[in-house]
Figure (cartoon, rainbow, N blue to C red):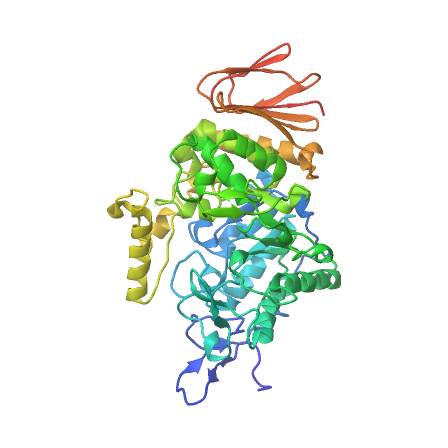
Length: 543
C-alpha cells in the first residue's frame, strides 16, 4: 500500500491461515518477533560520519562485545558511554555479537529469528545507528556478527514463505540453509541483501560470519563467493572499506583466498588453531579433552605462530581423520588471533575467564603473545582488566519444553567432562545473565588496573611497531625448548621471550636489542643474557 509510510504496522496472511505473520524482511519488530512488522524508514536518521573510512584490517586491534552484558543497562546508548575506554585502550575495531531480533528478554543473539530487524531490547534500529555513528566519531570501526547458518528455533517464519531450509544436509541446529537446492536463488538473495543492508544502511564496516563450515553449497558459485563479490561492489559504490570475516573450523585456505585463485574471497577468518595451541600450553598441556587433544605442546604453538594452521593435512585424533591443508603461503593478517572470545569463555562449563583459570601471570603472558603474534589481535570484553565477572551461556526460551531441552543438554554435555550437573549454571535463569554483566567499578582497582595497564602497553607497542604489523608469510621465527617450556618469537626488530616452565631460564640477549617491557618486574638482563623467571614474558626491540 502506498499509504503504508514509516511507522505503519503490517503483516501477511498466507492462504487460509488465520494468523497474521510478520515480514521475514521486516526491519522493525518493536513488539517482538511474533507480532506485526512496522515500516522503518532508513533515510530518517541523521548521520554525522561523512568521509569516514576504517583502518585496514591488517592494522586492527579488535574488541568483541555483547551489548546486553557490556554495561549494566545493556543497550546501545549505554555502550556509547564506554567507548572512550576502548579508545584509550587503543582499540580500532569494535565487533558486536549478533543484534538481529530474537524472542525473549536475553540471549547471545545466535538464535536470531527476524534477521533484518534490530533487537528492540537493545534500542532498536535507531539505537544501533546511534552506536555506530558514535564509534565513527571516535575513529572506531564497527564489525557485526551475523548468523547465516541457521535460524533460531522459535519466532522465525521464513518457512511459511519459501524453501529457506533443506533437509538434504544437516547441521547441529537441524536442516541446513538452502544455498543450493530448489528455490535457493531467492534464499541466497535474502542473505546477501541482509549483509548489504547492515553495511549500507547501518554504516557497519564489516561482518563476521558465524560458523561458515555449516554452509552446504555445491553451487558453481559458492554463497561466500557471491557475498564477497557483492560486498566489493558495495565498497566501491560507498567509497569506503568493507570486510568479511569468517568463522571456520575447516582449516581450508580457500575461505580467505581470492576468487581469481579458486577461493571464496573472505578477507579474514578466526584462527582457532592458534587459540587451542596457546590455551593448552598455558594449561600445561596435560589431560586435554575434546578438540584440545590435538594440541598441548610448545611445538604446536610454534607451528601456529609460523604456519597459521597446526592441522594442515595432519591426522586429527579428535576427528579421527586427517584435517586441513597448509596456509603458510597466506598473509597472517588474514587470520584473527585471540585467547578469549564469546565461545572460548561462554561455552566453558561455568563461563570462567582465562585469568581465573591460569592465574594473573600466565594471563599476562597470553596477552603478550596475542598482541605480538603475526595475526590480527582480538580481545573479548573485560579481558583487558581481568574482569572478575563470568561470561556464561544464557537464554530466555518462551517454550518450557525448549528451555528444559537447553538446560538438560548443557548438563549432559559437561557431565562427560566430569562436571556435576548441579554445578552447571542454568542458562534459562535471569541470574545467569546478570552474573555475566561487566563490573565497571572494578576497572581501576588493584590487579584489574594492573592488567589494564599491561594491555595498554602491549597495544601501544603493537600499533607503533612496523614489524609487529607485518603479516607477510615467513616473517616470524620461533625457537623453543619443550622440556624447559620456554619460547622465543622473533619478528624482525622485535623479539618476545616467555618462560612457562617451573624454573628460571637464561636465554641469549639479542645483540643490539634493548629491553622494552616485561610482564613481571623480576626479569634480569646481564650483558648478552636474559634470566626469565617462571611465568614471565619479556619484549626486546632494536627499533
